[in-house]
Length: 306
Image (cartoon, rainbow, N blue to C red; front, side, top):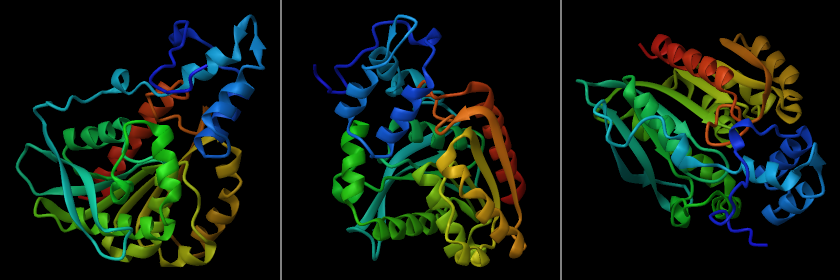
């Protein structure tokens, strides 16, 4: 059986399909690089629930980006294009990103939008357009630019990102944050939002940028080292899923460090959700929680970046 993502189609209507928690657990391991796509499908196929094959459930979890678009490329509220800019000390000395400008008169507060562990895919571009459509100058950098850019599918993107020097990826992200903060269309106020790997990057940037970053919103991102928390000057809104043991296990130590250093923060835990609940291109999406989390995120940015 082919495992090309373009060739796999769920044989049933996925809208009403209930996914067994064991399949979600396998998908989480696959998404984070702990197993291959082939192994994920093989292990899922050994599970059957109420006559529904685990393989069907597994296929339903793969992203469907075209159906997930919420803001059109041609939306009259935005102007979007790809840009390149210097990134000294990064993986190639140059970076690229998807820059979304509001069409209203600027300047505008800037927000860096940071992808998961697979490069700048269409979901993250859509998130950038969502921010642009409500008045933020949004930049979504592509960590894979030094390797040729997001390849058009998440499996290859994940493999490419894993091969890049992670320390230099972080430098590329820091340079990206400074690029959008200093952009001619920016007010100089900076917020950051990221998902999974991108959430960890938000926390990293908070420890490195000091007063140059005013607000950070990590969605289910790994916590920074406790000793680095003292360097945080920005306010944080921490978005977490109830069923996300790996990330939630880090919270007690992270919170203790935030409190010990008098860092402004708030944390929201969304009941009944799992890792990736904001990503509306997959069945992990939880519409109610994602909408609430996004309303809180934009209100937070409006407050802190004013």
